[in-house]
Image (cartoon, rainbow, N blue to C red; front, side, top):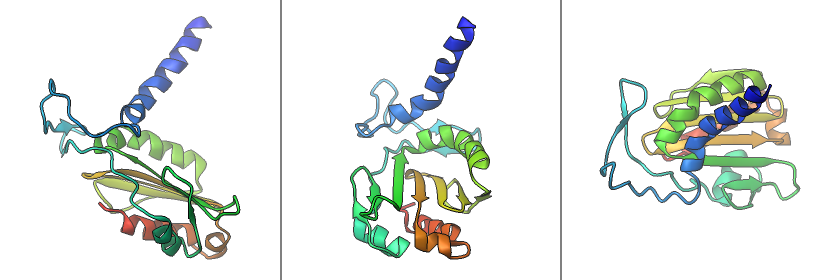
Length: 175
């Protein structure tokens, strides 16, 4: 029983390490011991560039245009409708961090969302939707993006609303 209690936190730590390593304080500087511009071969057939975590790709007016309703900047790339209901969140990471967590995120999405589809963006991408929420993840040479839309009445009311809106947001990302 004690061994199980130790193994679970270890696995969680290993899965979250790439996210922590590329947190908000990561300036993208390279480790002199590793050598500047070193490429990492994450999937065996295509090298990822040594790129830093990108900044938030949108402003509140841009997000308002993308989702079709007024949105406010709540900080840290979180945008809300001002009523505490609808939100759009963008989490950014380096290409390496995104590649490291992509398979896990996609697998988790299949358990949470009604529909998960691969999309042709960046190196790899998917979008996932259900009635009141949607998620899209993109790994590109410039960075990785996780976009989450939640609780938009207008989007929920339209057939294919979350998928269509997520595709619009993905098209606006600086890939």
